[in-house]
Image (cartoon, rainbow over all chains, first blue to last red; front, top):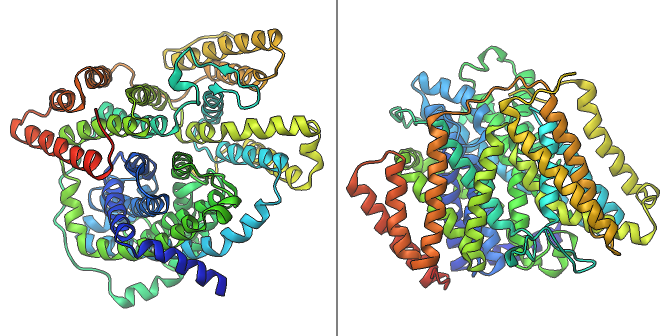
Length: 492
Length: 140
């Protein structure tokens, strides 16, 4: 316990500097604005912020990202409740009861409950992250190539297991991502693979421009195609939930937060699945089941606490083992490499200030979300009413500018655009993009560890090592079980 | 079983063909090379070919509106964005942005001149201050 407090103190030293606190605040504000804007998911928002961090000290940069990541998960609820246009996929569940309350003339009650549940959920998720990350990182130090190969395979197969629509298309997206990850110089032989003579691809597909293209540009193109116009924002009633109301929700918040964190830890599950499962569980436990879908505060609480706490959960495998728990964590993994760092157990030894900075940033960001959320709801609603004819060109210019700044070359901007068009085509044909990005990020790790295994003792090593064998079995089950069940874990 | 490639499966067909070409290329490189650096991509490409073939021949219940006017608008936006990148390379970031940002807004149907000019100037000033001054990144 004493060690944890000392580590947190070290983390707070990063935050309590002018730069640290400034970027923490900026991250929360940007995150809420991104989350509240339909079409800009947390992963898109964080991908857009990464290029700005190029010349920042890494510890401050990750405070910035983590604050934005956490705040974006909350921001989605603002438009979900006010205008029934969820800013993030995870906020779809919040809209079910939140918009009902708005229609009943109580948006303040819904927005207030959402921000309190989000902040508390995020705080509990952060505490669980702090407790679990170090022990799991200790376990990670025992991992060799066989275990890492099996773990990476497990992460990718759980994405297939959790896919809600077409599993074949999810498989295709993963294989495309893995194949794209093989582009560049082979680390073992030094030979070039699939570079088409383009020097910009010699070091592989630049991750940040690719992710900005796949997440941000593809999303904007899809929004332009669907021509979604935001509805008029309802009159904002400032009446917030009272203390008695909140006390009645305490068990729902606690249960959903723990559930959200645990679901967040499973690679590929993420905030959306956490919200859906938590909402279902809250309805099962509730004494007022009939209110669900008609403006239940328990419904809003369960969804918001779960999706916020899943952030802390998803960071557990990223920080401990270097395996992203969600699409946004895949972006963070790319940001680690941009700053010359490798996520995983070694990070606790080589750059502890970054790990502890992330811990502290998550705790502090939730406090700021509470402050900004309660004080600024009316302002956020005004901000998101920027006409799309102005907003989308700005985001496109930001994507192209951001991808240029990573390596100072317009080749990366072109690549970002190409990935944007590719991502849009995939999206409109029902191929999910998050598995593709996760595979693109994890591809080199999968290949390198497999080749090390082959050099060390052959493929049988994967089945002889106990941890590896268990992970491979779970990976197989992750694909097989949903096929046996014949339906996905959740139906949105 | 009749193999009918529906229009909504055309992207699946393109992925299938790309996978097939990559697999053939990777396996032929593998045979002519002493190192096994093409083994992993070859296996992946083969798997991609098989999975995408299943996507193509599977009866697809999902329906997509393929030929909306907005799809053409997206393609136009993508072309203007490509032109923007070309311009930025050729004549510098700031003049290229000053031309492209209003152009993109017009294509998206925004016709109020003053807000477009205001946002363009605000963006250029912010980009200069943020990237050039604060982050010391030259935008060229």
